Image (cartoon, rainbow, N blue to C red; front, side, top):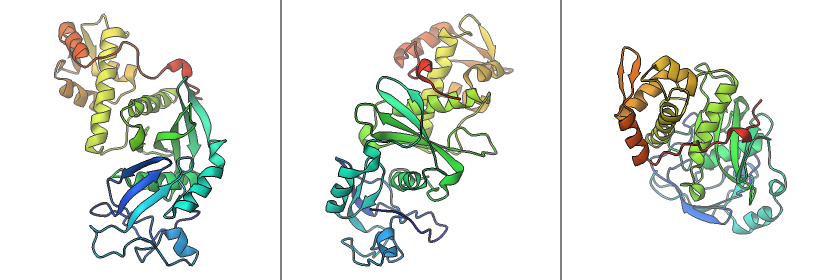
Length: 313
């Protein structure tokens, strides 16, 4: 199983198409979405850590062009994200992985069904590097995978199995004061609103620092849709049920302060919702249209994130 990766160049391992046919994450097997060279040595046939250990034999096909498969199946531990191309190696490690009984990081959100842990890249370097490598197979705009010291990772765990289901990373010294750099819910756990939960949690971190913040730009098309869902629900919930519910007019600045969402993100969201007019920095709210929007989009009165479950410093 993997212990160290050598960075070869500045291309971040990006390829035109998937080069690993399938990946097995624990008991889940899935196809990959994007190609990545960072798992491999310079020969494009051997996994990087095996090459460093002097092993140059591989079960993967040699590279002919960037559209060919380099490896039929990659095995990844769903506790710690260490990897191999040999099933017996994977099964032996998986049975005794130290993260089965002890998850890395500190608890920052504890609900009945899920837990969010803060995992420092500087303290848990191997775990976070392997997490980033896995992520590159499912995010086309994921570039950072080695310099994890400068990031915190907030990982969401299933309380029943204690297995990680997704995460977001946050740069420690962001010049733009971004509250999120990269986010991914792993394919087996998608459509469970975990992305929305992680986004909401990232804003709670900003509020604890008294910051109006948001994600690193530009967002991928998939990421933008996830944020528009969160932003529109947050804005609608505030205008219908929050401290602004009795106001016929509210300024963009006031709404930004209350929600913690940047003004330009609120403006984009209002255009997306197509129900609230903005003139001279003021929102003119038609309650009837807003209620119809809430009904059509099945807006719940209570947000997904439970603030009483927060353990934020």
